[in-house]
Image (cartoon, rainbow over all chains, first blue to last red; front, side, top):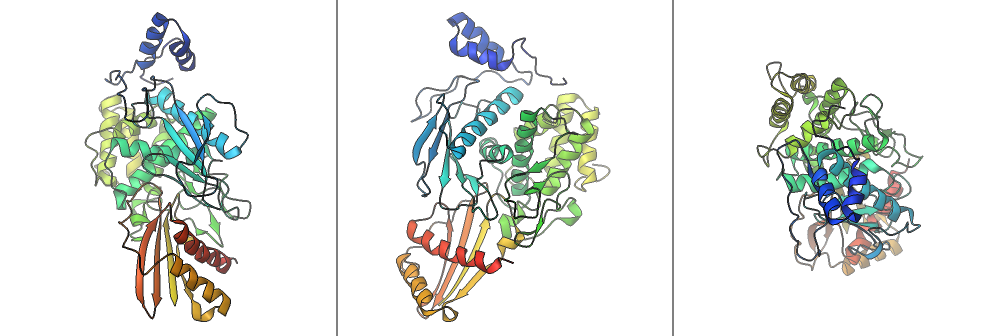
Length: 349
Length: 103
């Protein structure tokens, strides 16, 4: 265990239960224990947000899953809200579990209280549109399609896809990163990083055990491909007569200049994705503990600007590694080395 | 009438799905050409006001729809959710595109 966060003796889920159900004194002790964090943050009273009622206590999620009944009206009708039993609809229940896992991951690993760190209730709509083959974050909530059934299955089947989408909400809350060119590719990469970490955390996998794939299981059996993207080997996830070949570069020297895809945000994200993979693999152990912490603190770093490119981001990750683990620490050296291997930082950094 | 649809964005970028799809009603059976003309009318492609440019947002999808007819040429840039009339037109084109790219 290399996390620098002081750990309470009681596991977080038990503390949460006490915080919810204990006597007033037990509750306040449990809440204090839950909010302990070694990164100079303090407990914030979740401010009341217009229209959403009482703030959600820290460590507790509040989910609502709606169905659009294959129309495009949002949010649609409520199908399952926090604490309710399974609805018996795979998409509804997968979204409910996936949002819960994402909340738990961000809370237990980074002490982040929902997307905005202020307890934003998590809302998702499933069965959006007819054969709709996409999932997206619309600025307020998650939207999942059922997939066309020919190429894509329903978008709730992959935990990393759910984590990817919700992380777009986190990134929008923490940064003003433009969804365009290198800044946009960083936005996409951050979503892949935390989506993959969520999956690894759920499976308790080490960096060496993880598959580092994004969207494994999203394709139907007809598609020749393992996943939508590979963080370990960008450009190798699929090669299919209909979808074409995975266009992701693995090295800055092969950066793709294009006007499509918002300037290649889903294409060039392969470069920072591989840098993260290389850093996590070299650090070893659970990727969310050190590599994930460094990337998370970089995401929260005020120096991260709207137009931050790969090089500035790389330097910021190294600066955060140095701040968290010490100048010239293994962590800092490994992070720099990862960015050098993908050609973003020069040998002299 | 000539229609072109470009679908951009979404959870991933797939080269095989990104190519623009072009449909010329002169090359369609009469019945389908009429159906398409009706969809264009119902979607008020030429009459509607220019929609505000969609925000660039995580994984949101963009549709770049161009219709050329003797009456003129119009390009609309749209994002989800679509109005039902626009959805009907976009889905008609996407269904034909799917059929065309099937190996």
